[in-house]
Length: 282
Image 1: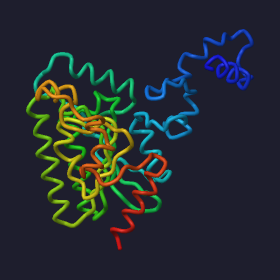
Image 2: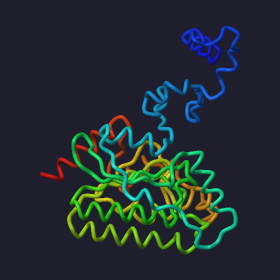
Image 3: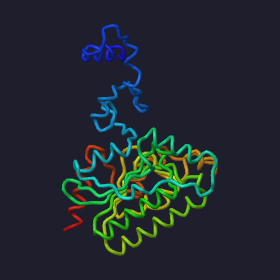
Image 4: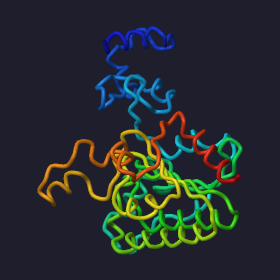
């Protein structure tokens, strides 16, 4: 099957040199779905909002691609872009790794925040990116999100946070953990003003992010089959010495047990957010 796909791609790309080997097409052009095990042409996956066209698995995506999917074209204006990572503990090699990630990902931190329109509705959005130290929350991430929350309060705009994280950033120690309290405090002020906060949980949302702002939404949405929890299933099993239920910490399990409000497929996410914002305005 995969050879047939490669031949079709070779035939469709007439610009390629005739002596190009079919095996060369595998490099950088294909992605394997770890759910259905199908080999997929990467461009087809991107055109399908980074969702497997065969089984519907939602691949992890960058903050840049997420913003493009959610914000109306040309409306996104970044907030807190000058807030960058510092090294409060003088952790060896930390800033060098950060610089390398900046070069590789073309972003400056694990979250990008800004003001935009969603189907014509003004909103403040924060989008975390798992490509940057697995979306871990350090001082800069906490400060950017807090600044976005403060802007939502000041401008009386709904807040949407797309969460993806491996937890607190251990290179920043206690400073990282304090971001849980800082973001939670800011959200408390947002709530006092009666401003809508929608939390969107994507794969994976774990650790200190789950224990703070990710779980505090007025409405909590999630993508299908997302891993959501504080500690991972393996750690919990080792701690309690028991086998966990099937699908434990997946978004479907959490929906069934009342921890989230709705599972929304990526193709419906933008329209769902806009609908919720309009209903809240009324």
